[in-house]
Amino acid sequence: KAGVTQTPRYLIKTRGQQVTLSCSPISGHRSVSWYQQTPGQGLQFLFEYFSETQRNKGNFPGRFSGRQFSNSRSEMNVSTLELGDSALYLCASRGSSGSTDTQYFGPGTRLTVL
Amino acid sequence: TQLLEQSPQFLSIQEGENLTVYCNSSSVFSSLQWYRQEPGEGPVLLVTVVTGGEVKKLKRLTFQFGDARKDSSLHITAAQPGDTGLYLCAGPHSGNTPLVFGKGTRLSVIA
Image (cartoon, rainbow over all chains, first blue to last red; front, side):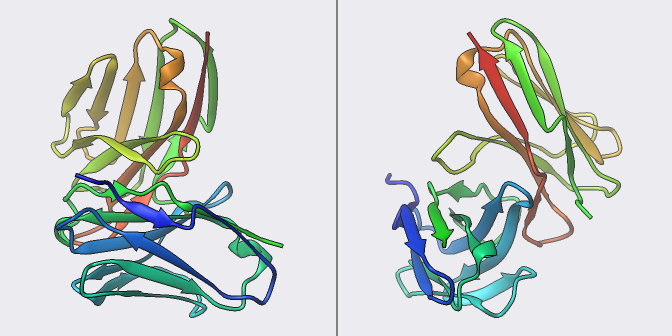
């Protein structure tokens, strides 16, 4: 079974631009969560989607948004990029939205904002 | 305020040594998970502990959940270079909420 895939793996943008990241979950998984990982703050939860509906949202500004499609693929968008948005963005999928279910992480998208 | 505090932040040891890393909280967790993350990859789940006092072993790795379910430890016996990575603990803060993660312990095992 293929794992979680994320595209692109690396991205360089400049301040003020916007970016869209993509995540394809494990086949059959309906829950997709997004995390931001930085050296200073560690892994921080952005949002979770289940069956195209946002189930939970972390404490991030409205510039961060996401969506999930009917095939469970998910995208996240960051508008008006700031230097502090430079981070590894991780996507994780699981079979249901239950918090005890195992999450499987993708390799991440490394975003650098110049 | 970090809900899960991990210590030490960094650890560099020689191959063959033993080590313990810690994950502490002032809050009770229904379960805690341990992940290992290698450079260029996402975290990979190692174990989930759910019962206070529970001990789980995974080859040379021993995981313990505190009796009060507020802390956990990971002990590695005879560390090998392949154990190098970022070790993260995580747990659901309450109910069906998303996982909260500690900032991790970055382990380097030198051959």
